[in-house]
Image: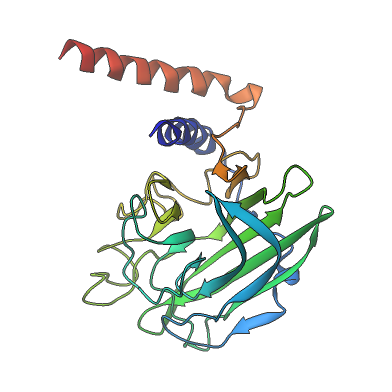
Length: 276
């Protein structure tokens, strides 16, 4: 699928740019907007259908409600209790996965998953906070802080919307469970980040399911990279007429050397493949 190639190329560039910066992530924003509702301490729990406050068109399916799942994602079709992340590409689930992994908020040192609605920059928004959340089995020695915000863009077209994944801290990637295969929050079947319409349209960020890649300091560190944003740790997606749009990120001028190197590297790889 062409859109996957465009997303991956943009993320390669943004990853190289982020690697050149020492700025710390502070991508989670307006978190207080999304504290009106709390998913009580649990492992693998979900809400019932909750109202977003506006309608969205996601690849031809219309939604005004969704399920908030404790394990780092929201779904439009049904709750998702699954704790070992599966591949989103081709998955039979309608999902926005900010950090699909085995979140466990039962330890009192972990905060709970919260969600709510509000206004942001004049637009209706629905957001979910997974701030300082632990992992299975009731572990809190490492905590993750991330967020999903869905923004109504019906000012552009009926059902149009944006969504973004924001990351401030990613210290663990896997639950300590035999099925997940993790140990001390790492290894095994590690987290996946992306989206799927439950059919032929889907996308995962590079580094998904790669041990250590998405962690702070990892090769595809979520807090260091970005997409369609100049804020480290923010990955933004626009959905227009039902379809997720290709990235439109334009690198900053100071990063053009790195971009050139990245493109040159891609060209060299292409030439080697053609000559093989």
